Image (tube, rainbow, N blue to C red; front, side, top):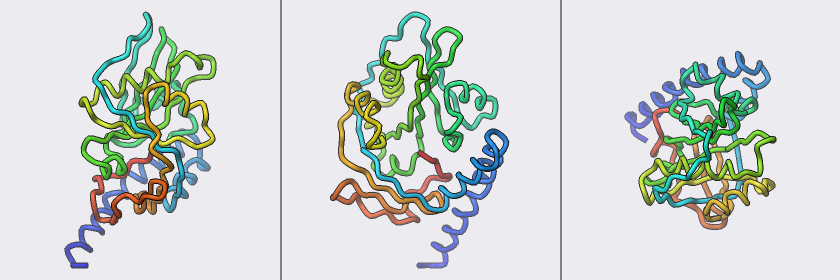
Amino acid sequence: MSMRSHGKMRMGALSRVGPFLEDFARLWRETGIRAAFRLVRKRVYDQNVNLFYELRTTGVEPDLPHGWCVKVVASHEDAAVGFLLRAGGESELPYFRRNAVAYVLCIGDEVVARRWHFPQSPLAQWLGPDAAYSGKSFVKPEWRGQGIAGRLLAYMAARLPIGSKVVMEVDPSNVSSQKCLVKAGCVLLGRLHTTECFARLIRVRLDGSPLPAIRTRDRQPPFECRH
């Protein structure tokens, strides 16, 4: 590897130190030291196996009942943290990332659900310019069974270019989320195996068919998003 490549890698690593320390401080402040150190552990080395779904966008926005509205919130704004917590994110503050976007559903004055979108997800970037990564959704227990999660997904997808592919990962044990995605028109592509080291996506495999080999210096965003 050339000296120039080594220099770029070092600069890339240094550029992630500041955002990581800010994330660590925010977690410590909002949820305590244990949650902050869980973030550290996951950022060092993390392996996941999830079901991988895809949804092609059509540009059709779902109809929302009277009194329902969706607010789009940028997670890097400090003023948004309390609002996002009201939507049900106490255990998911690691998702509060720069350029992460939350779609929050309100019914009247009550915040009832939210869905994450990561415009600069390393995985979505690797899959192509027409891919968008949708993170976890959450619906408050008392509001479940009304199709809210599917409507939030459709609302998010309607704001992307027609023909884009929204990709999602779901825990194999989460049967309710799988049913919701299928009902929303998502297609199961298989099991996705991912490995991250120091918040860099270093290995991706979809079932027995590996995706193009990922080299750590290729297609990395200017900062890392968790998903």
